[in-house]
Image: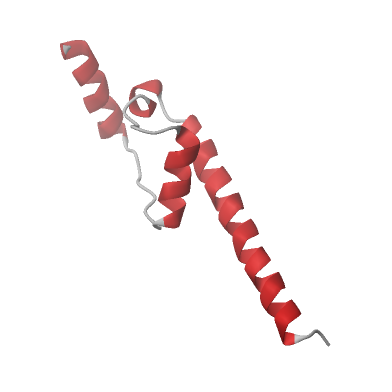
Length: 76
């Protein structure tokens, strides 16, 4: 039906689209984190989200992370 080249282009576009959707969802998740954790990011949320998706390394932030971050703020 389709030429092989057309199929390859469409497949590549779909991968890019899915990557961008995944990065947007990760950015949305990062924006919902408590401010004490968001302040620890060295880069902007969008850049951090893209890196997480690109490297397939999506960290989980637990309550312990929030508590330890709050303790650091109180100590300083």
